[in-house]
Structures are given as C-alpha cells and as structure tokens.
Length: 188
Image: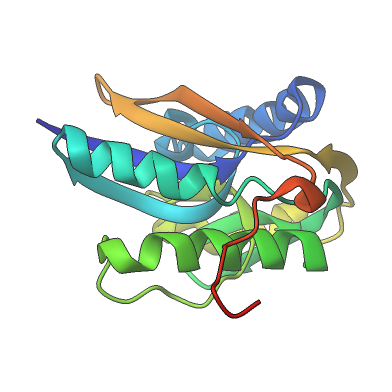
C-alpha cells in the first residue's frame, strides 16, 4: 500500500474562500484549471509517497514531535510569480513559518523521502502547470492589484491524495514548547 501525503498550512475558511474566488476568476478568464484540484495551502513539505504501515506510523510520529511550537501570525500579501510556470500569493517570511518548515524538514530528513529538498520559498499557488501560454497575461492582469490577509497559525495539516484529489487527513495542533519532554541524559 502506497499513499501520497502533503504537509501544509491551510488558511482559515474565510480567507480560503477569498483565495478560491481569485483562483476561480483566473481559471474562468484564462481557461486554466490545474490549481483548482488542490486546496488553498502553503506547502511546508512537498508531496511524498509512503509505503507500509510502519513507514506511515514513523512519518506521523516524526510530525507529532514537531508540534511543540508557538502560534504565529501569517501574512499573505499581494501577487508574485516564479517565471513562466507559477502565479501565487506572496507568503511573508517570518520566524514562525521559517522555523516550522525547518523543524518539519529536520524531523523527516532521516526517512529520505525526497532526494534533494529545494530552498523553502513560502507561497500560496493560484495558478500553475497549465499557465505557460498565458503566464504573462495573468501577471499583467494582477500587476497593480493589492491583496492582504493575515491569520493566526496554531497548527499544520497533512493532506492525503485520494481519488485524484487532496483530502484533509490529519491536523497537528501546536503544543506549548515549554511542555516538550526533555531528553534524559546521564550527564545532566
């Protein structure tokens, strides 16, 4: 048995609705649909295939060890792109999101789930893959538009790919970092 999982931040429903409205507008106006197959999200760890019960158990155990994290405010501000292939909402980098991503990557690194992890550039995709022919038109359309939303992040999510769709699978609420069990040592 092999499953595909995605570790991400999901904005609150009211913000996700605003984002979905933008994605639907882009989809209808420019006839691009690929991004609508995914929930509005900020990827913290790219999709990975995991085979077998023990591998899944270890994956989720590693993620639960990362939940000792302070809540933080995340700001989404304006539009940006990775030239020619992805149009997105800018996710402002802050200590909270950068530390969370680093902790997740460090916790999952021993499993060697991905060959080489790219540098983390937080973003929320609005259109990708099928936009190459009209990429410049989309960028021009949004060049002068402004967007700003912010939300409190107090958990992260794992989505599972089921029937060609990403479905919510598990949420990991943050726990107070001061309550994290200390590693015992003979020399402390």
